[in-house]
Length: 233
Length: 233
Image 1: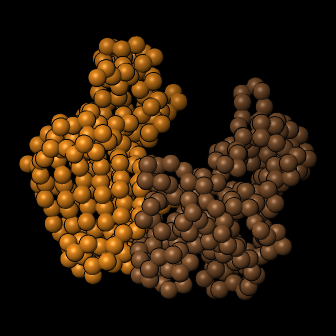
Image 2 (image 1 turned 90 degrees about the vertical axis):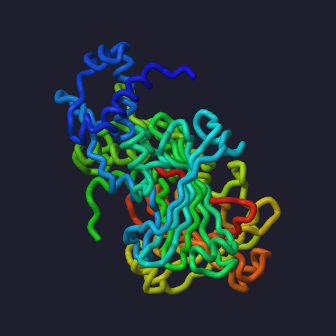
Image 3 (image 1 turned 180 degrees about the horizontal axis):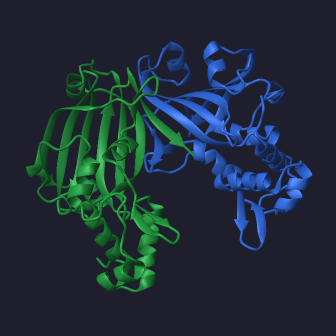
């Protein structure tokens, strides 16, 4: 796989942020320095900086320099965790059960995920909201990109922060396909509801800053007390 | 209700677009002319133009002027109609049944909708997708803002185009709250499904370009053959 040259610059910067060498609010080297370090032209370095700025990772200030945006784990978590109380208030999900396994990718997963992985990790979790088991979440990620994630269990509540801090994958976009579906026997048991009860099913494909589809996630929600919030514009 | 001065400028421009005096691709008068026509300062006119540009209504070209963006009815419709086939293809909804009535607003509607209307119009519609009744849609709008909409029936498939072309309300943002819910007897009958079947319920509050909440819409979808698509970023 040949990468465009600006991707080398993005990778370098993202790796430094992931490694904690560049902290939120911290200043980046100049375009010229960066270009020299990575071995690309200044124009290529500029293109990378502009892309990172467009994605809200960097902030350029006229005459001052380029800085890492302060993106807190909280905002990153709640951007993608869309369940809210009826009054719109954020609910804090609690992890009840977790299972991480490595297995061969299905042909559908190979077609969807970055670099057609032969192996994937499957991360299955049940979450509770205010004492009620409310979510069954199954994330599937390419094994080559997330080597050893099965040895890190228990994983943090917000997987995207782990992806960012330990694997340099910054999730910035997700396509979702939402349906209402009846609970089967296993799902009903896990969520303390009856078989056939309506569940909200969200099939998500998450893309990182390089536009690579790095995670497929299927979430099932009980929405009798909570609802899924979205803003269109 | 006192409006900020820039709103007068926005109203003037939106009214001209709505009236067809300003066409997509057409050029606007200069900031100075506009300010003189509306009777505000040039800074106020500039602020209005910047807001309209941010919302994608206008496009400013350095050294050339300001132009109306080409926003086709199609794009406007499909921005907010989110149902897709399993393979992601757009489906064209067909109107099966429509009822438009004027009635007093509930206290909840008064609290949610612009200018606490005493009266609202309720637009109830059933739509079919590829021959299958798939959607029950109920839109509620403030009567003062949409005077006489009940005399326009049958309404066009895309209500937001009507709001824009006949009432100068450009819908640009919507907050949605999504749940899975069991069909009651009436809903099951309208959608040719069984009582208790899982339906996707989308409660939407739509805001116009001035940030006014101008429509509350409740949509119920059968999602056994279609799904609701959303992109998060």
